[in-house]
Length: 245
Image (cartoon, rainbow, N blue to C red; front, side, top):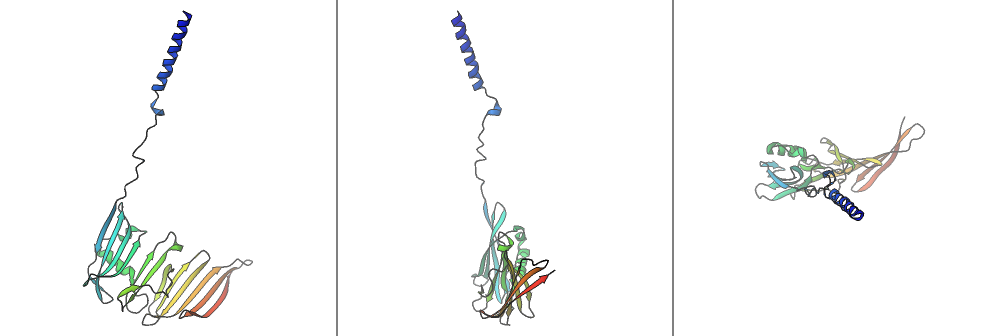
């Protein structure tokens, strides 16, 4: 009799334990979210804008811009300047935008802004050149790209004499025909002045580099290096130290 009672108690507690395992509360259940493991779908779209015909450098042409967007945000613009008569491409440039809202105008206002901002006579020869600011990861890695119009080939080309690492155009003096550009790094600031003749050829270049030296007593010292260059040869060079109280 005692043996049967013991067996009954063992079976009873075993059933209770199995019941606890099969009736776990919902808070302890692990639910796999299959949606969150899926990668978002990127939608790539291209919007093509064409300008009305206009004359640039005595050539009748028009702009064709392909605005490439991802999920509704413009990321790249393929700019093509095309000859109206032959439909050939005079110039093309792939531009990665940092501020897409700058390119959200209607077509007429959009191309008016493009022509006003990017078509500039840089070397003062009477022909419009193409200038565009390209944003880097920081201001120090940003650049202003300059393409000079060549009337012989009717194309826009890079002038190897103009610094390709220029950050910004500081000024353009159309009377004295001087273009001033600047850039900087972690140590110094640099300013370059290009002096052109009436044909758009560089006659000489002036370069100024400035860096802050270690303070001496209570005085702040700045080193200023100057160079004058004619036909790739340094014809004048000097170093000055300027102090500030």
